Amino acid sequence: MNTRYFGQSEKELEEAARIIRSGGLAAFPTETVYGLGGNALDPEAARKIYAAKGRPSDNPLIVHISDVSQLEPLVLEFPENARKLAEAIWPGPMTMVLRKKPIVPDATTGGLDTVAIRFPADETAQKLISLASVPIAAPSANLSGRPSPTRWEDVREDLDGRADAIIMGEPCIGGIESTVVDMTGELPMILRPGLITPERISSVLGLPCGYDPAILSEPAEGLVPKAPGMKYKHYAPKAEMTLYSGPAGAVRRRIEEDAKGLRESGKDVAVLRYGSSRMAAEKLFADLRELDREGKDVILAETLDDRESVAFSVMNRMLRSAGYHVIEVKDMKIALASDHGGFELKEAVKAHLIERGYEVLDLGTDSTQSVDYPIYGEKCGRAVASGEADRGVICCGTGIGISIAANKIKGIRAAVVTNEYMAEYCKLHNDANIISFGGRVIGKEDAIRFTDIWLDTEFEGGRHQRRVDMLNSLGADPASHS
Image 1: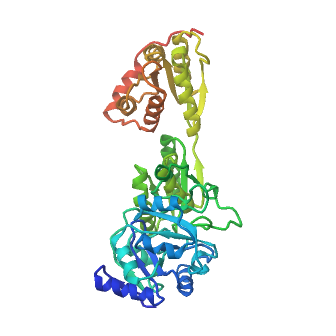
Image 2: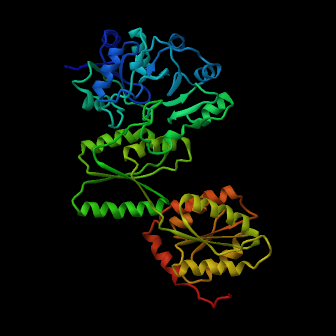
Image 3: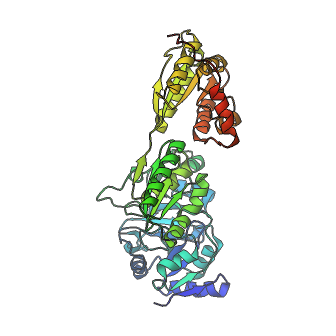
């Protein structure tokens, strides 16, 4: 097949639309990723899409429309909640699963009695669908299993000679595929996470919106996919990819160690790290494809904190890209201690650290009954100074007294923290190995946030190393009170 390449002029889009109307395939941009489009009402066109991609035929296709009025001829019903979502979010990166009418062939829906429908926000996509005068079935325009394409050059790599036409549009701004939400039940259910979050859907409908359990872990054998991306290996680069999960500092040290070892063995290694979930969404697929072009053998990547919804959506792709190969890094032990005034703060930080995967050494106190803070400041200081723990968190009423006690131990650099700047710079410039909080000064959420900043910040070194060395040389090491 000789693939034709079109720009975005009216004349060229009309020709691409004619190809689709006549049963051919044309790849086109959307705001999420590039799609490989064919006539959604033509079973033969659907079969051509599966063949061009090498895609299993039980993996349903998404049907694209250019106006909400085009939806009702395709579905048995358009529930009120689905209407509300359409009004609030369409056009945009959200796909709704609804009961289909017989006009939509089983070849398009993977044999299901439901159809996934999306109204894209991209103007080129809208114009193409309108000119075609038929709904367009379009999965991502890549070979099955490969990273989804966010540039037309990516589509050319995979589908030149497999598609009749490729529209050379702009790079996709979203970077990951649309959110797929099942609207056939009493409550909305996300079948594929994306940039439209469950929180956004819940805010529109006033109803809880969760994730289908099938997307929360590696696909089970025999799974019947209700949406694209639920069953088969997706988004995989040619390189072997491994994810690292755990405390940020420990993860980075482990990746550096593993990368060094792999390079010494002759492997060409790439490291992926993203500053935010939004950056990861925009860049992940493009980065994986670029690393393939560079011929990398191994990709080592930091995981994202998937408690945030966009990060969860990106992690869904990263896990599948890596074939669920994740190394859990838990090589840091943190000592905690408090008096009665800091007990509740200590307990909140402790629970958070355990959730993040840290090993915790709780040195007390274990109640709100009055105790002497110097004892607990010293305990934590000695645990860190001796190497029994890597770092420490201490809490009293103000955070001041217990930090003074800890700082009596030679080699301890305990810093009282009351804001984000102090949390960052006590590590960046002072390499603080203990931080101290006041239970009557800050709240639990602040303490948790400041702890994360401190743990995720690396010591800057350089001219600050001399000052840290001076700190370490100061002070006596008094006899223990215990």
